[in-house]
Image 1 (tube, rainbow over the protein chains, first blue to last red):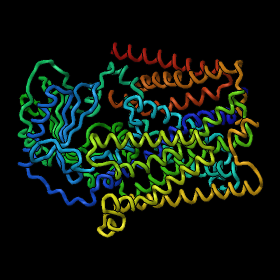
Image 2 (image 1 turned 135 degrees about the horizontal axis):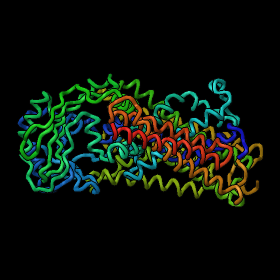
Image 3 (image 1 turned 90 degrees about the horizontal axis):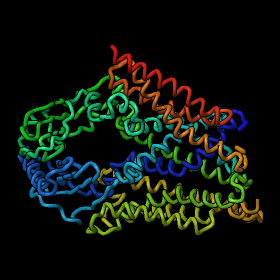
Image 4 (image 1 turned 120 degrees about the vertical axis):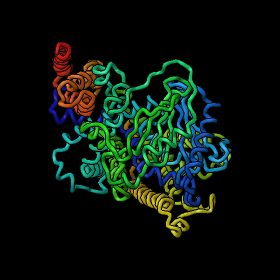
Length: 539
Length: 100
């Protein structure tokens, strides 16, 4: 590589960018939808029609916790942890979670808070809702492996941002340069304008994304200075009580209800969650978490505690109490928490979330334009980078472009349809919804491999446009609720989801018209459609 | 952006650079994190966190360096020399801490 700095950065930007662009598009698109995970869950679980959930009295809470404890003792007497979520405005059911060992999967059940019996499937529209997009965003629904794949792609994004800046000589001029209707030039301008406009956001969201999982991605410091003992390290970092390792002595957890009421008295706040670590072992502890007050926290970058009380689960002795609104740890931890809050847009209200949403969509569009630019350029002038395999590689890139960009968009909007069309009494309904989401995505890949690129783009775009534009109608036919009714009762979350879907539907129609016009113009000039296979084989 | 055709002759240096960027860059960032955890002026847990917050910038810089270097050998040297220096410095700081 006897090249100038700019040439080598250009190579790095093109090839490093290309191989990660599809996964980065998925991370950006699902993360951006995840900004509105609560409104999406609200729409999917039909919360708009549900009445207010009445607040629970202390006796009702104590009774619910006792029923949850009985259930957990029967199901998982010796688990890694138990977690009990008390009913709140968003979730009228009593939720219990546990994990048998550190390696086994999380278990979740929903119980009736008055009787403790497990709620039958079909009694509610069981769905992961917007959390599906959030999980897709940070772990691709693939657990630890997914977290590492996302981390690698995020590092590639950081490198692509820096090398991209080096490549552009005239970053200020690029700010104002968009030459539409000029094929390859327009894709490059679009890629540049979107990236330059959102550059500070892109740097912030990428770097803070790595910081969220800092201890996973870069464990060297804890490994070298704390012998890799994360529990000891984190209790030192947060000024918490020392860790309680397993003692392997059998002991039963004391009744949780009295501990919960003592905890509530100590922190002067209602309980949101009760967590028991190592139930069944002498080392077991109970932590009472005060209910999170989203409104009070919305103007703060450094999150404050909602209050916690920690007890020895066997003796009931108090180990630690942290009052609500207190902050623990020093300046560096506050910096890290601020970076987290910046990433999760945990502060600010709807205006800021919309700004994140638009910036995130611009980032996704920038990635899409970059991937399309790569192919548009090579349709005209094949680079022969892979010798005799070049045509085959281009075909793969072209197919992946359609499926990763057009196909994922289609799968995301199809997820809303799946939510409404899948029968309510299906077992493990929430999981089935996500499996169907992946099935649709896989089908778009098969479709992209079958059709020519132009046809594949047009057909997938048309399908997305239809699903977006008909979403309010689907809601009306399946649940009797829809946009107009939601607007009439002032339910901005339901209406917002459907209005956003309509806006995207119109955007896709505009994109389709553009593609059709260009194809017609190409036909009029008696040219063949820009088909990668033909061009690459010819060149 | 005119990537040259891939031939077996220039295949190996490229592969070497990719390994240098991904693995070498990560190891350099790890060693730098340990070194920084000794010199960040904060309590030990906070210094470890502060050093780690910085490590991803070091990793990024290392990757850029690997692809900007004139050849693959220089790319590797540019990672190994600072890496060795930081490792020795960290070891000495650990010894000094033990003696104090």
